Image 1 (tube, rainbow, N blue to C red):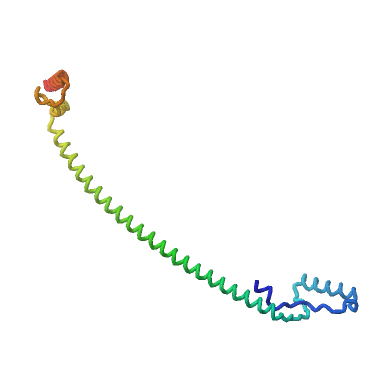
Image 2 (image 1 turned 180 degrees about the horizontal axis):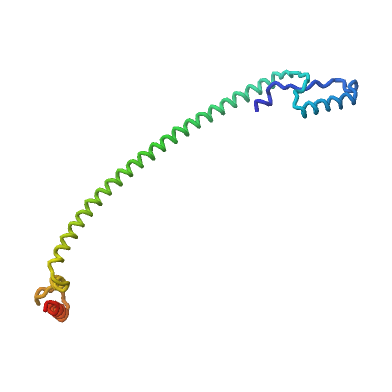
Length: 170
């Protein structure tokens, strides 16, 4: 936008067009085209236009508005950077907290797994004291008539298990 109000330079155009011959005008255009195609700089006269005071005031106002806008943009960028940095810091803190919580959970699981493993080994030792699997099954049931806490009659099942155990022991 500032480029619009900057000093403008143009080629000099004669004020009296009738004096300027049509052939000369075409020749000047061809010279410009030739200079452009040969990439040689165009030798032309330049005239600087003076900006009126109203345009200068308008230009100054636009420049002030543009500077204010750029200042706002810089301030918003700075606020964005600060906000981004704060979010990044919060994210890092959360990640660090998450990792420490994960390490604690892993340690707790290790302790629980060790306890479960010890219980399993003890159960395995208890299982190995029986000569066959029916001895272990018989040890898990109530063999005496008064020991069963339920209401159903399980005497036939108890008798079948005991018979199976006795068959294996023979």
